[in-house]
Amino acid sequence: MGRCSRYGVWMRRIDVRPLLAVCAWWTLEGLVTAGQLMTMQFGDEPVTVASALRRGLLSAWTWVPLSMLLLACVQRYPLDPGRRTRALAVYAAATALVVALRAVTIFHLNPVLGWYRDLPPFREVLLTSLFNNLLMCWLTIGVWHGLLYARRAHQRERQAEQLQARLTAARLEALHAQLDPHFLFNALNSAAEMVHRDVDAADRMLVGLGELLRSSLDHRQHALVPLHAELQLVQHYLEIEGARLGDRLRLTWDVAPGLDDARVPPLLLQPLAENAIRHAVAPRLGPGRLGIHARAEGGALLLEVSDDGAGTGAGKPGRGTGLANVRSRLECLYGEEATLELLSEPGGGTRARLRLPLRHAARSAA
Image (cartoon, rainbow, N blue to C red; front, top):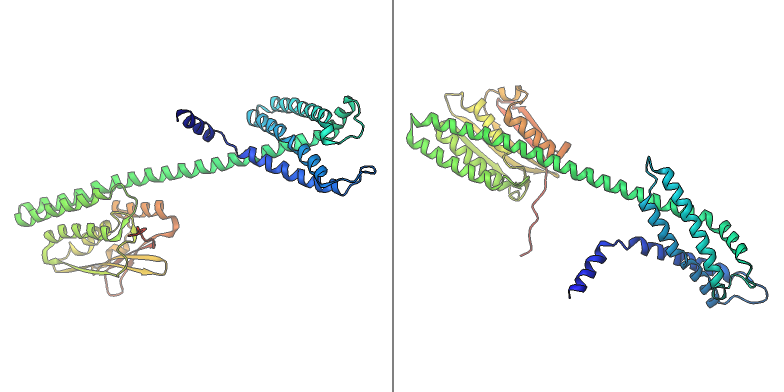
């Protein structure tokens, strides 16, 4: 059992694809040669199918180990800058060896291959091998180099993609680390303000803050979360602000059905809601409206946070920590596929509009 396991590991380490490709190529070449031989006439003897296949396939298959020899030379000594002189010397020696081996093979297997009716001296066979096989050797070396460079290019492309993915993940992690203390500080500051005015309200705020932190930590390691989880997190945050603002905060929820499993970045709506409360609701003495909206539009998911304030939020460029963080995360995750706009409402107020690609979570079969 151990020997079979070691044999399996050894086989997995060896890439047999080049050998299979070489065998397939030279088999095809042998069949083509056999077809050509059947149209020829060697003296008065007709060429049979068996004879043509024997000559064509056996002659072509002798190229299999020779091609693998040239591949080994290319892999060991590629034409890289600074090593070309040595590589060309190795190729010249390998080509001479292949020409000689090909001549020896033809000379000794001629009774089976039947290339010569009367076998000439080895010197003539060697000279013929030089004329027939020299170009073939260098063409084979060129083909192996083309495949080698194509594989290197593919590996560099994969490495670049992996590096970009790691850089994006690192940047997102840094943005999460920047955003979490930001809203935590603001929430604690709000709770501290309420301790001396309304102990019960401060207690409710701290309970809501605990729920908010738990929801945040549950999804901290995920780049995307279901929309219902993000809405729940925003609800915890708005409960904290509601305990502070009381009747001055009036909430409106407008979430279209069928979007619960839509994938969105975590902590996406909370900074927008915080911005609206800070600029539109908190400065007012009377009640202020805050709306959370979600709907699908074509292949996009539209998330909006609206308020009925004086519209000062739309006039600002939105360079605060929260909004700048949202924009940076959208750029990392979606590139130009996602946008964030701050729009002034015709009747007064501001609407923060997020447009994301609509992607649903994969549902497992029951």
